[in-house]
Image (cartoon, rainbow, N blue to C red; front, side, top):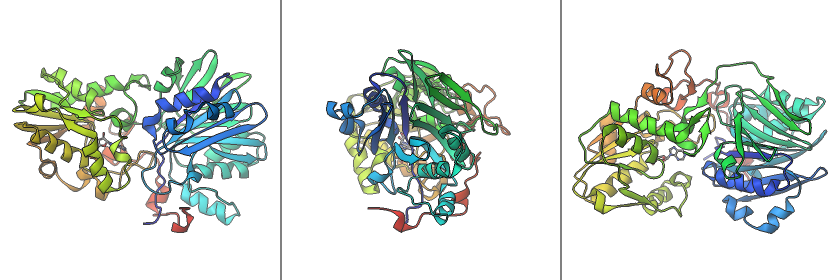
Length: 476
Ligand code: AMP
């Protein structure tokens, strides 16, 4: 299969003017590990030189060694965790990417997905650019090189004015740490502070691990420039309505993070409560699919007045099921990951709650696990509306033909996963749970929910034109 899609579903981190910059970057990335388990990297700067360490695998695989951290000299550092479930997984795509630009070294980390990167790349290559990776992020570097403005911040802004898509960026340009959120604010980015040193991170849980304080979310369309003269804020882009990714609340973010002023955990509990109101069922016990269904199952149980039990136990020594690249391994992954807790399931009418159904692999396995443990009835409740579209903005949703809800109606899905009943929270219910009392505003939705609604706020240029990188761009 040609490498047809960039897959960037990542975590970014940066810290400025702190004596333990690289050690803190490693800790911050560790807290963001759920956002990307394929590779990790850190670039530091000591006022003269840049230092880099990047590797495939988890943060702990690459950064638990004291000697590695010591080699990352300097009091400013940025880091990245990468999540790519298909396509080119070679070391050359691991971030931060680094370039020696006319104004000096520049390191860049990206969470998100650019939707016109392939067309821009083709133009750049025709103009003589030589790409080192197949990552969409590298397009930004080439556009910066061509911009030739006065300084890296202006070059970066000029480059970003040409790209479409979703991006939260953390960059290091000698004496500046830069954070950027795309004009729609699709992906998250927060600003924090540790002992007076500014910190940037995808999620606030990466601040908590350091004991840093959350200052605020970086605003959509904001460029934060951190230097010796302090934290400066620019808004160089055309203003568009904010469309933060609703899937961050549903699944992607860690429950102990605060996003856009909302606790992810409480948001998920609220979705579960809404689900209980919309789709009640006579049952004895509410059981989450751990870990992603725990908060919404608690919300469901509380609202329904039913007992909550850990009827499925998860083995934590295996990564997220989705990370496994082939269907065969994914199937095996689910078996390795979950076991039924027979004592709380046998003879019971069980409400099973999970955050989402994508391909239907997890739900099918879990329903059969619960039945085999003696449950009398299994009612599956999903704390998101049906996922019916691919994401082009940085969440790795498979193509439509692999999405269960895009290919079956409710009754067919219930039969497929083997449940006695199946129900999803409504789109309005989801919005209500996240604090929008009137539900989803039809003309101006408050979130990006394209995977649920088919309403794509940002042009999908390359995908609509079916542009793809040639197979021979991929280095194996
Ligand atoms: P599936 O087995 O394909 O239906 O996937 C559903 C499970 O994968 C759910 O339990 C979610 O917790 C998890 N999940 C949903 N979306 C994603 C995603 N984009 N990346 C990784 N895992 C996901």
